[in-house]
Image (cartoon, rainbow, N blue to C red; front, side):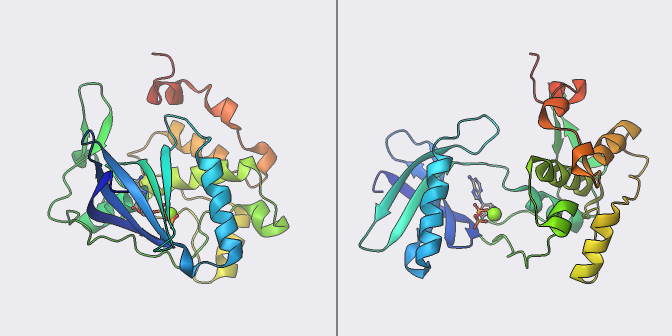
Length: 239
Ligand code: ADP
Ligand code: MG
C-alpha cells in the first residue's frame, strides 16, 4: 500500500470510505475502497471475498475496472484498487441537477463528437470529500414487479431498473413513488408511468416504456437493446 499516495476521500460505502489515490510509480490516479473487516460478520466477510473474486474476472469498458487488492492484517483492512471514475456516481448527478433546478437543454453541452455533457452547475459544486454519498435509507424505488410478487429476480429485472434510471435521468424523480412501501409496491405492479415532457422524444419514451413492462417476458433483452441504432451509436459500437 506504500505504492499509493493517499489523496482525498471521495465517497463512503457501507464498510468504509472510497479514497482517491495516486500510484507513486507513474502518477496514475485510482479509487481505493478501504474496508475495515473487523466490523463484519463471518457471513459478510465471505460475501466480500466472493464479490472481489467476481470483480477481478470482469473486464469490460463499461464496468468499473478492478486492479488489485491488499490485505493489511495488522489493521484488519482490505484495500481494493479500482479505476477512478472522475464523474462520480449518477445519483450525485441527479442530486446536483435537482439543486440547480432541472436538467434542461441550456445546461447540456455537446463536445466536438456531439457527446452530451451536463454542465453549468452554478455554485453547487462538489467540494472535496464533503459530499459523502448520503446513505440511501433503502427505499426500493427500482424494485421490479416480479421481485415484489414472486421474490424472483432475473436478467429482465435489471432491464426494469435500467428503464427506471432512464426515467429518473429525464425527470429527476423515480418513475414509481409512494408514501409507504405498500403504496410503492402497488404502483410498481400497476406499472403506469407518466409521460415524459415534450423535451424528450416519443422514441425515448416508448423505449423506456418497453423496459418498464410489468411482465418481464415482454421486456427487451440486452441483445435486442444492443440492436437499436440509437444505442449502437451512443456506445460507438459501429465505429
Ligand atoms: P457501497 O458498495 O458500500 O455502496 P460504493 O462502491 O457504491 O460503496 O462507493 C460509495 C461511493 O463512493 C459511490 O457512490 C461513489 O460516489 C464513490 N465511488 C465509489 N467507487 C468509485 C470510483 N471507482 N470512482 C469514483 N468514485 C467512486
Ligand atoms: Mg453503492
